[in-house]
Image 1 (cartoon, one colour):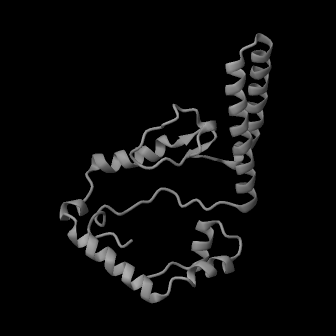
Image 2 (cartoon, rainbow, N blue to C red):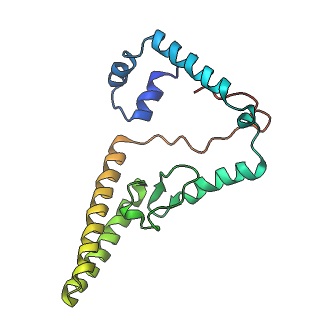
Length: 175
């Protein structure tokens, strides 16, 4: 079993110091990893071989389309493959939205608009609307803070995986 370089694991986990990642790695000795790998191999041997077939062109296209649909104005939606948007495109309120740091100024524009709408709702006595807009403001401010944290830490973009057609499905997954 090959283990990825520790600096990659640190980047994926958002650790600023590789020593933090080393602390987690130290817990898993080789014996534990070997037993887990054997367990996975036994489980995979019990699964129908048809599950390891080459994906059809339509399946692969559907998979890629899912990731295209996750791109939204403010960043990207982290919902799992094969799941629809559960929040009716109210992305700013969605915990699955990951803000693109380039869109932080857009959050300021959105906040100004929501504040103006809130003031109008207060003036008109639309208490339910005020409550909803207050919720939107809380999410918006939380997303802004998340975006600033991401901008400070940097972000690893792994991109969309690409597999040569002759290798897709030609072997069983390893992890």
